[in-house]
Amino acid sequence: MYRMSQKVAIERVQVRGAIPYLGTNTTEDGQQVPLYSSNPDIVMRWLCDGWRCRYNQLRSRRQKWDKTRQALIPLGDEPDMRADKQARAECSWLAAIPAMILQSPNRIENTDWWSANKRRKTLRKQHRNPGMMPRFKSRRDDLYFVCWHNRGMNANWRQFNKHHGEIIITGQNPKPVNLAGQPCRYRIHIRVRVSQPIRDYTSIGVNWTRKTVVFINEPLPIARERTNRMVGLDRGVAHTLATSDGGFIDLPKARLARIDREIRRRQKAQARRVKLSGEPVNEYRRHASRAYRRTQAQIAGLYAKAHRIIDDWQHKTTTALVRAYDLIAIENLNLQGMTRRANIKPDPNHAGRFLPNGQAAKRGLNHSLRAAALGGIASKLEYKTQAAAHSRLILVNPAYTSRTCSKCGHCAKENRESQAVFQCQQCHTRMNADVNAAINILNRGVDHVLGLDEAERAITTQDARTVQHGESAIVARGTSTRP
Ligand SMILES: [Zn+2]
Image (cartoon, rainbow, N blue to C red):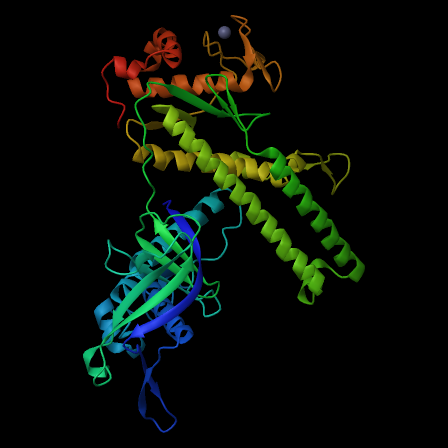
């Protein structure tokens, strides 16, 4: 699920009111000593540890498949089945943690688990390495916790001026352990620097290692009016996307190419360092030089930057599309064919050698980014059209859309004169191949909405085509555009 979020930097933290009870500590002679502290760093660490502890308790209930025993076994040594209340009562270090923090792992652990499983399934389908199964949160991970806002229940925001404000997290010490004569409620004031007004949020995520807070927002529905326009989109050869009205939408290619060059330059330097050492890469990495490790971090940073640029572009593009069109048709993307490695072709004349198979064309930042860019467009359109009024996304089967004539419906391989040009062998229509495919995708989307079968289709293709320039056929026929 997608959420919009805003990240801000923590300036300082203060603990006021009661001194939070952090749990009991057992001394060497077996005595139970209650711990209290209003030191901001200690208190923040305690919240992060408590959150991680509860998260891992929930995670321990998950099961994994054991190959040798041919059975599902618990992920941890033994599953912890305690409810929030019971966990709080039995673990002294959770006793004074605010409910809005202690309850949040319930949903987050669940989402994490299923999304990770879904991702692994997809990767396996694409014949890629699915990676590790989701595990427990480690002590070595960033110190982190989430606190629900729940319409003002906790984690409330107060803006001081244009660039500063604070989040106040409140909690209380349980009666039996509260210090005599003290208030039992404590307040944690997290002062942050902001650059934009804080929008509505449902929860906050505090990263104490990086000293940042993220306000997590549900996506805002896009405000739009009915436009009675429809569009089909196809992935282009020269352009990232082609639209059925003959337009093209492109990724910021120049910026991405610059990042690509930066990455390549650094990768060459890395290869040189490995080569100079005279060791295999894996050996060298074990005791890599400081320069090597620094460059490696730079490469990771550059990849992250490229992904941020693409994400931003996807958001801008999809929002503009949802605003402009009532109906958007795209191909039902099967990323499998795009990201999978090309099949190897053995050279029949030389044993052990291989012929060129197009793998080189599939390699590289450019290709992978392009594939990812389209997947992201589809998923962003999906939730944005759902949230917006009078907006609909239709996924169509893309088979033969690139070799079928959008005017007369003639389908032949020969129609595709070149990668870029479409020339119908029957009616001699000539146009950009991607735009032709986009029109076909739109036509299929319209057919789908009208619920027509193939026999009727030939008659109505004409309608469908007039539709994209003029009024919406769907509206004209009185069918709702909402599913
Ligand atoms: Zn034709």
